[in-house]
Picture 1 (cartoon, one colour):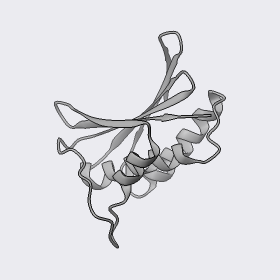
Picture 2 (spheres, helix red, strand yellow):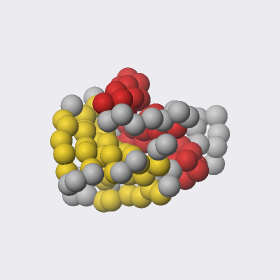
Picture 3 (spheres, helix red, strand yellow):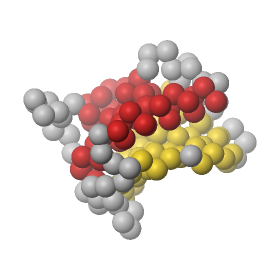
Length: 130
């Protein structure tokens, strides 16, 4: 895990995840621990759900290892997940095999987006805390 300060009111931390089934669980643990270290509260647990959704989508559709970065911005949280696929996420109809992830992201976050990169993409969201 990497941790650092950026600017006056922004702190950031990141971790690489191996891909596979354990990545969502590791991401939730990482978010919970980092929120505690920053003394931020997430009473609803939505930040954990959102991080898990972004990571699960990245593992499923991005192929291989992913990275998650958290940034504390004032009283809010920015979650960024990097994967190796250049294909942006697409909203699907909910079904037996999933399809609810982007709907949750749209419904629970203040805003979200995708930044294409040379070797993949970053899917990010901003979530107000408190």
